[in-house]
Length: 472
Image (cartoon, rainbow, N blue to C red; front, side, top):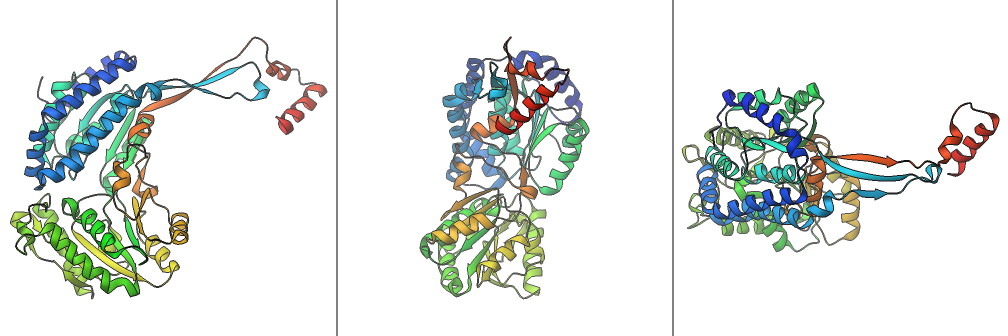
């Protein structure tokens, strides 16, 4: 397979896929399942190569990468293989009595040429997951993985080249300029995962061609603790979910809002859990389960956030140290972070956990509303009324009660944001729907009451229209 690198190949691949469009549009259930099965087999065969690439890019342990990069992809492919027949089947729907004699159904058609732009933080998972939906929907796809996670991007390209014809699925590598060049082309659907800033640029580009799109962005995902749930479990789950992948997880708890009188006990237990999970010999830089930051520039950015928060009165009660040349920053907890400060106005995307306190429910709402829309929300409570009220009053893309992250891993649930944290949904059936057009089809019989509405519009027909409007 020809290597695909950068601007020179974009037009060739795009034209090649455009010529293939009508053939792929007509792929059967069995053809789509065959492609997904080949992809699954190749992932199994390439497991060690994938793990090594993720270790190279992000310093992730093999166990962590297998659980949060490979397992979700494998799970999603198996789910699609089991359910694709049902998803593709035309769906009969009811027809109003005013259209008596007609029959109605919905058929699910491929959108066509699709573009998948994926990020560096979970480079394998967030490239292949939307590809599964694209293939299940019967589409062509071009994948543009992040240039920051170079090793994993190369592995993704190799896997795709060995499974698919390039006129059906291709990987194009390159920097930001390559992504911009791709966005100038007329795709039928764009699936973008990444920052809100670039998500706005993707949306502008999509509008030039009226392309449909899915945006999976970020936002500020709160962890809300009312003190009624087991503190050991609460601290353990937050320590795992926040500091996995060194905090570079779009649905990680971005900050904690905890009842004032629970703060001291919770933070003491949380520190113990973080040390237990991520340090060895009392040092986080020796912890085999603790990942690294993607590059030195982001370490600088995170250090600046900590420094500015300390200068404003925030108290670092754990961590704060870093080694820029090793792309390492310690798990860091800051108590007393400022609303409106730099650490609370944008997504942190690193191993820094600000903790704020509240006295009443209105305080929680005010804190969450002062920040960008949450991609996820985590409620820790045994109080059913509190949970119900929080779910009703605080919008978010998704939510987990008494846990973190796990709603993402359930292939039966839709995943996506709300307002500034994203548009559209992915995973499983919802991903299939995102990559297909639900086409309305009605078959009208020879005899139909609608004929009574044809001109000329007599007094009788006007009365009949009144009756239909009122009673049917």
